[in-house]
Length: 267
Image (cartoon, rainbow, N blue to C red; front, side, top):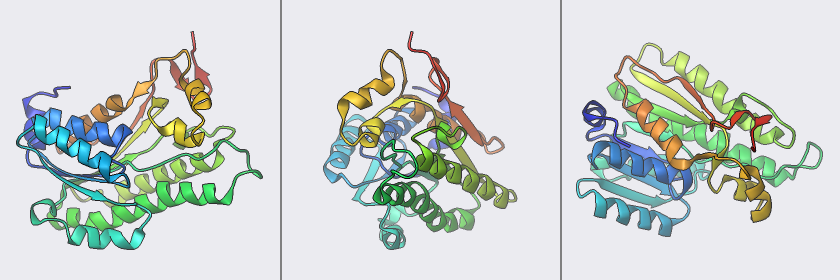
């Protein structure tokens, strides 16, 4: 995707931190930032799968000679390690301009009363506590220069609750409320808070939710044309390459076959 010369100019030399960057929307977002800026960005890519990050870094640097990429094996739930991570970044990567809080997951489809405690904690620790922690640790960098973008990967689940998604929906409602309050707190600054909330996106999401059950995961997208990771990546890059006076505060993004979790055409 090409957003044009003005967008490329606004992204030029930006330092962008992406959590959960080894696959799916995180990986696609790294690729899209390079495509939109012709590689004129600095990327900090974090994920637990270091080998995947190495592959992505090699792909980016071979295609875009100007891009600078710093990768770290990192679990966003290691809350106490975020501050040291930021302090120990190479000097040219320390002045972060865009934070993409992409890491998140859904675990299981059990109803209340049957949900495993480890799944409850797993979703809240990643989707809520880690997101808040990263935001709090990066925000002082933005406040110091009075600029920066905080991109929150929300979900339609933050607007519509559904059976079998009670905990996941609760985490995405929490993300939305946190983001709304943060946007209000930052109203006298030039720091933007952007929530991108996808509907059905075909990534590893359903495989993780169904814990490796490929048949169950495939049924989520059966007889539909869902969104793909690059569709959401384009939205993220679009939002963060707008003029300073424009904030894409919330974007609810469905595939054309969907109107809510309960309205999905499989024709």
